Amino acid sequence: MNGTGVIFDLDGTLADTLPDLADAVNAGLKAFGLPEQPASDIREWIGEGLPVLCRRAVGRSAHVPIDEMAVVVTRYYRRHRLDKTTPFAGVPALLDRLTTRGIPMAILSNKPHEHMGPMADALFGRWSFAAVEGYHEESRRKPDPRTALEIVARMQLEPSQVFLVGDSATDVNTARNAGLIPVGATWGYRMREELIVSGARHLIDRPKDLLALLDRRR
Image (cartoon, rainbow, N blue to C red; front, side, top):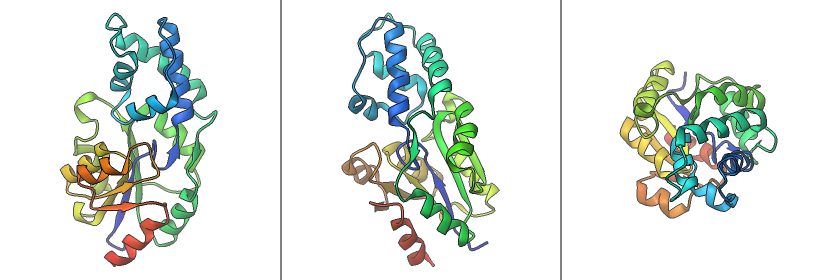
């Protein structure tokens, strides 16, 4: 083990999941008689778990029961979560390089956990991950640091040795709360300014740029 690990966010970092997420949210809105929303808006609502996503999607329509909408969205997404989702360009090559270097990797998302195993297997099944974790309960969703710290322990590393790569302030704050190294992925679903303001220590514009950060740390 070389003393460095990497935890990745999923949505907007490893994979472009927006098209399937937008379809699922709009299926939920349609079920409750609400107008569909453009993917450009839904993009801004992703990253803080399904209940938050549904609340943002319904907006001022307080009559919509969020729990029931979440059920509809989940049911649709379970069937269609891989219809349009693909890894971002450069991600497979990055995972190859990290694997060659023997760097432990993990995935930590606020996506409901039931989706994480099937999606990781389908999209990234040829790489080994120390952990693949999603949303289990509200009290532990990112930016709560506990799951991240449990992953670091599985890697047998110290928090200061682990990079957390994500595309949102939620990911940066998770890293900071856990004592990890926060790296902002600018190709994702949030603006570069959000990553800077939230305190990202490094910004990377392409997946392969992470390798330069690892080289500098060595």
